[in-house]
Image 1: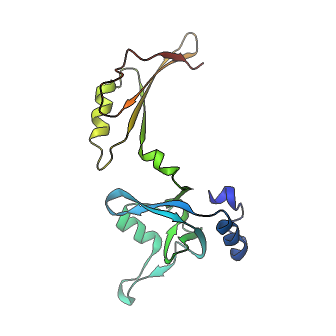
Image 2: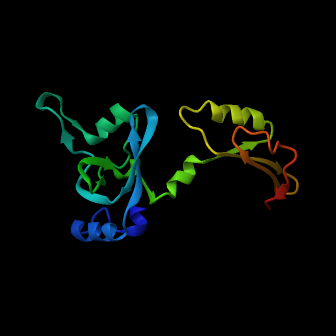
Image 3: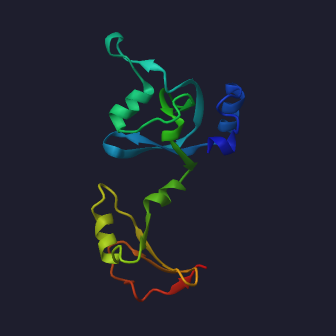
Length: 184
């Protein structure tokens, strides 16, 4: 989002860059939360900080960088620690490495929580196995499950795909009754 909205976000004039981001209006902002979860900051305005992830913080005897903090608290490696961090305008004291934040138009990101798309190759499992794996995901109950299975035919260089989409947990459309679509 930053690269598309403000291409020179890493080195450009902060005041001008943040004006552009403010003009885009509120966005739903997804940030890391403990336990591998994601926290949504609804209708926030993302801003770019002058600091990068090498910023040290904490008590004098226990200072650590933001990059180290994200590793220890969230298990996330910050690959671009030299990049400017971002923050939400209403929470200017909370900095996030830009690579660990997702910014989407308001309500658009909620679709991601509604649909799970799984791709399986031949002999990698069936719909029921995939459904069980999704069901076992911690705290994640989608509204729809899409299973995309693909078989490649070496001699003709074609692919065949079967797509099954059904309300999660229902028995409405079982595999086999779905239409097959040739991709190539």
